[in-house]
Image 1 (cartoon, rainbow, N blue to C red):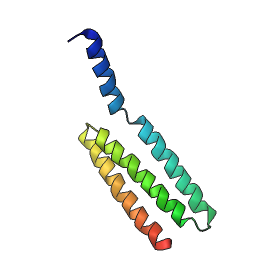
Image 2 (cartoon, rainbow, N blue to C red):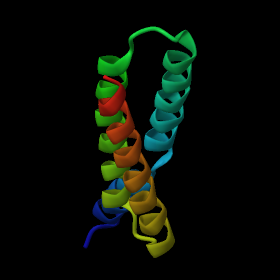
Image 3 (cartoon, helix red, strand yellow):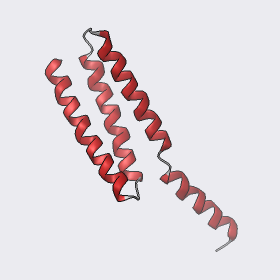
Image 4 (cartoon, one colour):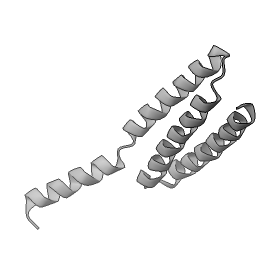
Length: 92
C-alpha cells in the first residue's frame, strides 16, 4: 500500500475517533439548558428540542467510541438525557 494512502487512512481514523466536537456541543447544550431553566418562563418546547440535540450528540459520541469506558459514559449520559426529557414533558 502506498505511504500516501496509509497516511490518508490514518488521518480519517483519527478524525472519526476525535470526540472533542461532540463534547463541545454537549457543553454548549447543557449551558443553554441552564439558561432556559433560569428564565422561569414557559420553555418546555425549547427544552424538549434541546433534549433531542443532547441525545444526538450522545449517540455520536457512543458511535465514535472505541473505548468501553467512554461507551459506558455515553450510555449513562443517554439515560440521564431521557430522564431529563421525561421531566421536561411533565412540565410542558
